[in-house]
Length: 331
Image (tube, rainbow, N blue to C red; front, side):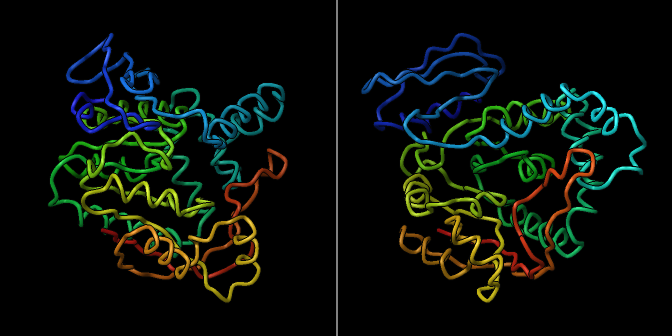
């Protein structure tokens, strides 16, 4: 993490001032150290250049850790399946298996080949309309923030699709965040491979309790970081506290009349995937919002793996539907 972030951060538990013990620093970047809260004595380490601000009291499921580590272990115990996935021509694999092959290549450090396979897999996993609408939102966000100042904080960065595009096209400092240290370590290796790491800092925290000071963030972005939120109220109130400027959230909405997907989404508490509920959640948390750059595209259930005994990619949609893609522009 870059040293400029020190002035933006505080204890995510009690909001106390942090005292920094930097062990290894390289080119204005903290590689190893600890931030100690002077009020509650909580300690937050920096490891491998990643600031770790996770608090132990909030439950969370690190799906990145589960998918990646379980996949590698599963294949290690079944060498015959590993050969069927990794040692055959790519044109013999179904899209889901191409995706899983890309994950294994990432684990082996072959990031460029992995990204190439992942892009090829997406052509078979998602409809052309789905991909076009998604890309349109990314382009909109980049154009909107091109003229702004200060660092860009990206929420729930995951595998870093939006961070990657912003780092390539904007001469700006960027902070990639996620509650999964594993995916952030993966992002660092990818960014280093692409020569983009000098622009990007990495922070691990739960967005329900961020380590940022009040109004510290001028521009906050997220690429599909909202759809999987089960209880959006607390998170949006926390983001309202730390954002002093704009929040641009790429998302999509399901039709209200979509009974098959709708009932399952609501059973899982994923109400921000419906426009009315999402707008109400933002409003209740004190945001003023506008839904912009709207486009609609067909979405189908994603295919499953033939090699890995029906392993899937995305949980939704359960049935074919038309998604409304957009950016929620909040301030």
